[in-house]
Length: 365
Image (cartoon, rainbow, N blue to C red; front, side):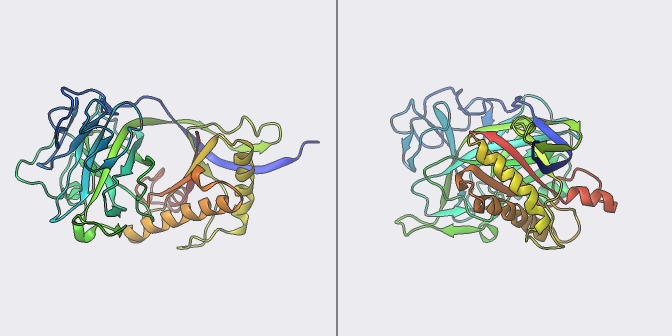
């Protein structure tokens, strides 16, 4: 008789469709090969800068602004080109990239936002604060090269939305491309978006890396930007056993844990949660070509900052448990979204309970 694995997932899962709505997502189309700094605006097709910040464009076609450049050495993640921006510099100097979508996002529809970053070699600081500013129209401020206050604008003006990316650790990897991802529910106005650091220097969480002859700064390369629709596919519970374990879970679908639970305002896993996680751990060990992402969410009760921290801590707690079970740390990434991505109303206890969730997605490496 086959041994049953009591690994039950909750009622919904989602599929990310391979329909990238970002035009020229890896910066391959351009007018001329870069031969100097700040060759991004007016050169890279369907991309621009929203301020006077002099965003850079790097392409292997150039001997000076190719993969070995004035700020470091990094190959493109895909293709031959990538962007480069200052995200922390004095006095609140900022650079951004502004992308265009193929079509307006649909109100109420959920999308997955992804881009990749790598810290430039000469950076003497790394940061934790990056985000995306969704806009209805193309923006340009010809009076400033300073920080865009996306949080304030999105709260006071219609047609704007700020999507933060949360990380407990700073983005300090100078060798590899690091994946940034977030889930976003559209309002129906989104035609453009801006990527960068929208906090001023005093509010930016930084980590000093090493002594340097340069003034304090943090500079990141950016490549492979995507915004893809997520569709709700099914509504059912999944009970895995030895016969179905190889086929029940699919890659690139977001699943919600049923029994990964925590006490109020805590991030310590309850014993009942470990049963489900042990089954997932075994599945990952048996499928070594799969990586996993963990997403933490809360309801909207309490302070926003605490909710963001708590969701990150819970996702990290799940991830570290899987690592303790033998999962290689390079195969897992975790993210906390606070209360920014509800799947139900926060007006009822039942709805809030659905929003207090931990999700995961399997990714083929």
